[in-house]
Length: 404
Image (cartoon, rainbow, N blue to C red; front, side, top):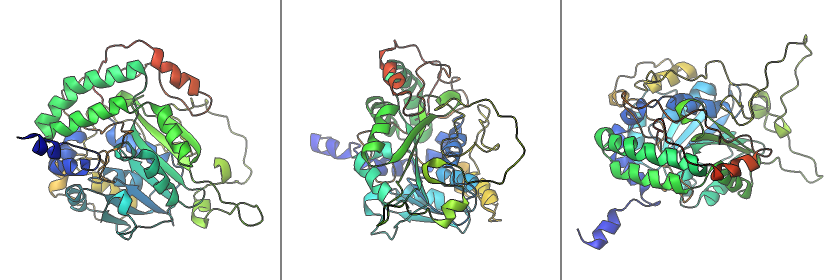
């Protein structure tokens, strides 16, 4: 193959959605064996704090094969969801699943949403493994900000690998397990290699927080997830600011957002006086149990035991949660396992700030990265110094395999 042809086949930010399209048929099976994959998506969706979601209109940008869509329907049960992806092949897998009538799928990139008939305002946006795949993350974040109602949240569910230890864990686990498994189970090992390198070079959680702040988001926060993905996968939250009216007062949030419990600055809705109750132990800011903008994480959002989280029928779970009554998914997408939105198939591009895709599977996988590592990112603000200090820590050998 000559140099020109080789260059044309190289995966780039503008063509990464094509690579995902090549592997669409095997993607669900590949990610379906990753412990915590679907659970972590539900955690991030819950952290938006949108309550039961009745009357809300949400955007799932970079929906891929629909696992992030299922997470939204499970945690924000009454919402209308517009699910968008740049890969026609990934969407074809998603559409074969059974969905609530409140879900609609649209094939387009982030840059061409308006042309495809997708317009705001939305009461919340969920971006799973998308922002890390955009050619210009800040530009993409500003576009997402413009689609939100005043006061509405964005949840970015993505990789961020910071510090010497984090990068060492990521690269060792990736090259020893992820890439070989991608070749054996997914069929697009070149995409796994591409994502592995981009994750390693994209910067840690604090860099993502800075991007969101520069894009104009308020109240930016970061929380990690639990299990083997702790300190590798994060929820990044930001809000569109309430906009002042002509007399300098704040516009009220939409009635739907208010009904979901949103108040300026994240304060909970006032409740009738109640008998004093014993306070629970405080939750560590930025840790796996941090509920983000929610007052608490739902009881049904929990860490699944390793090896038991198979997404062979993800859409039926969504149907149950959404009350669609069409809990009969037996088509080809179910045998592909659990796929969630792979990195960046929306926007068709993979960004310079890419922290990677989640693609690791197999029952014989090592137990996972050390969940007790000390360079864990914490809540934004008080712990920026702690995030930065992680860069100075010596590397330690990884004990398991992160998903990519």
